[in-house]
Amino acid sequence: MGELLEIENLAKLYISGYVWTEKKVAVDDVSFSIKKSEIFCLVGESGSGKTTIGNIVLRLLKPTGGKILLDGRDIYSYDKKTYWRKVQVVFQDPYSSFNFFYTIDKPLDDAFNLLENRPSKVERKKIIRTIFKKIGMNPDEIMGRYPHQLSGGQMQRILIARSFILHPELLVADEPTSMVDASTRVAVLNELLRLKEEEELSVLFITHDLAQAYYIGDRIAIMQKGKIVESGLVEEVIFKPKHPYTKDLIKSVPPLYEKWKL
Amino acid sequence: MTVLKITGEKKDKDLLLVKDLRGYYRGIFGVVHAVDGVSLQVGEGERVGVAGESGCGKSSFAQLITGTTTPLLHYESGEVRVDGYDIWNISPEVLRKKVKCELISYVPQAMLSSLNPIKKVKEFIADMFRERTGCSYSVKKVCEIATEHFERLNLDRSVLDLYPYELSGGMMQRSIIAISTMATPKLLITDEPTSALDVSSQKRVIKMMIDIQRKGIIKSFVCISHDLSALNQLCNRIVIMYAGEFVESGGNEDVIKHPLHPYTKALMDSLLPLERETKYKPLSSIPGVVPDLRNPPHGCRFRDRCEKRMEVCNVEDPPEIVKGKRMVKCWLYK
Image (cartoon, rainbow over all chains, first blue to last red):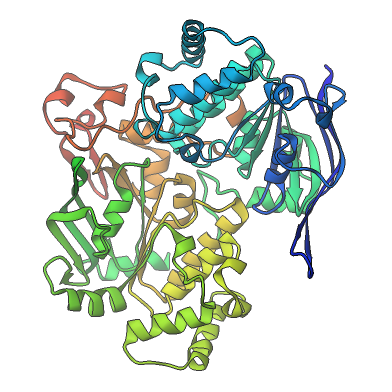
């Protein structure tokens, strides 16, 4: 299996102010790669630079150093539209991802504008319907509704469906389940797993929840203060951690059936 | 074990007593039955957790028992007694001075907006002290008290000299809990204290809340959360809330290891514990959504999502079945 995304020595420095500048290193010399049909998890506490990496991969932020290659080409050598056809995103907050003045048909419709040969309106409807059926949602229940009439889990799955109109090669999922209820969280995760199996999708899964990373991921990287401190297969990293920070992180996950001695 | 002893000694005296409480949202959208007939007793030394999905009325419940309702939420009927004070039938002045300032402390969900953004933490504490006690202390004096209190809770005193925006989420949540317990209330009510935090700060918050109770700064707390595994660490009694009603309650080991109500079972199945087997057993989510509480369905409110529904679920409200310390509201156990 070839590498889909390669990141080499990525760095990002946030500089604020004009005269008295303040510098903050958000990402410091990070290298990893994502294979085809693989879910790669980035785990770390808040402020460790996970989301920055996600935004850089999406070309929403410019890196201050390093290289990112998609299919062996630098990501900035692609045309913007072509690039976003290949790389799509699901953000953290489903409630602010939709414009609440429009029915959810509109963002789905707009996604077709990124395509080179745009299908007709009737065809678009058909495609949307088949995609909804595929992800196990009833299109009649969803089409023509407004965002406030849907639950967070439903909205998040619609966003995944939307990105799938474009058949991306890479999906950046930036904490897709943090605003979703525990009861529907699994539906979102199962959806990503199914897409990985059936559509050979690669996912960059950004989360702070180790249990989710373990459930969904193939490989994992633990981040601390902008650096990757440990990476490898999920089972090895989570059950045989080597770095002290990883050990600490795993100990802090509240176990369900036993109590901490506090 | 000391915790249990305290409960045993003062069994007759409840710190918080809620009887058939109802609270509705009234607006142009209709009447939403957010809290619909719930009863709860919290004795001294108890740590109670309320769990459920979003939209089940957990936060409305917290607002009703503290008497701090947001504009559209109205108290309908029922009784809330905080250490003997019937909070919905006393004058607002007594409610504020006696109950809100002395007996309880409420940490709402939007913790980021709880502190004053243009004041340092110590100045905010001075403000809070003046409001709570009615006499004005100098910032210096308050600082001394706060330092002592923070040190007791293993918090860094340098927080006092910072502005809220300089604090991280976990640090802010811990400082807010510390500040709200400075006036030594008897009961602490927290709404989603750990939900916006990552695991390491979550652990610190849990540790601190238990610490506060062990050291006797507060007598008991009620914690509202959707995260059952965090509640398991925090509490010794868990109440499961669904669509405005309590459907199950009991000691946390009983509820988590042997859930009775189908909703609790479904909730447990959808959790992701960090265990080796998690990756290989297919997890399921609960199908459907919480029913529209504007006109709550007659009969069992969970029946549309329930696997074990029966004829009787459509017709009649399920009875509350009490077995020792456990309560379950389901026809299955009749």
